[in-house]
Image (cartoon, rainbow, N blue to C red; front, side, top):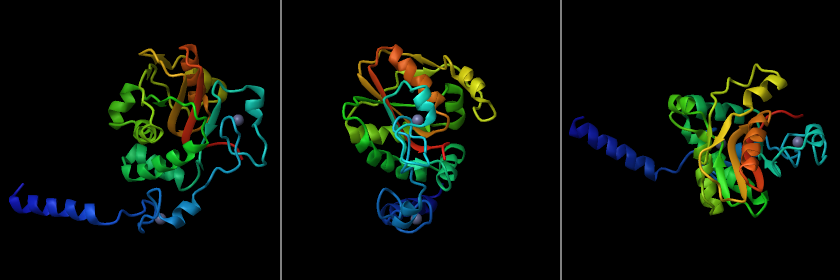
Length: 236
Ligand SMILES: [Zn+2]
Ligand SMILES: [Zn+2]
């Protein structure tokens, strides 16, 4: 690289640092939580949801039918958004096209939503990703979201569980196949001293991964587990 090019690169980087950050959805100036006010207002907020698994509900019931029938092994799950447009597009862009500029918005929303969590959460665990997928993608979006959240909650970020089985993609499988696809998918790699672990992920689809991970944690002696995800699919 010539000096001139190097100089131009430095000037460009300096300019970026001084320009106000722009909303990743529309390019306007950021107002709060890493986005502009209009785009934040228009997001598919998950206002009426199951208190236990965050599934969007049509009416203000406390629990969805599935949680009434088969309560999950976690105390509560919170998802500020529904997995609808433009959240689905943005989260896929983060994962498959490394569009990391959406991450601060979702991290900010998770920090804000964490106010509703039980106050005794004492560790944050990002949903583990199998090493092969991690190697292919180069990062785990759950870790990127969990890191600022752990800082916000002032609790340790732990990585004491690994995904031992490279689970087949869940979409295309029926409920029974999804469940057996996930059984034994996680393994403890280090003892956990925390009493209430918070699982963090970008999106919860069926909830089977969260149920399976929460079971692994409970079997390892963790007293309580909660879940916080940016977006929840399914429901209404
Ligand atoms: Zn915007
Ligand atoms: Zn539920």
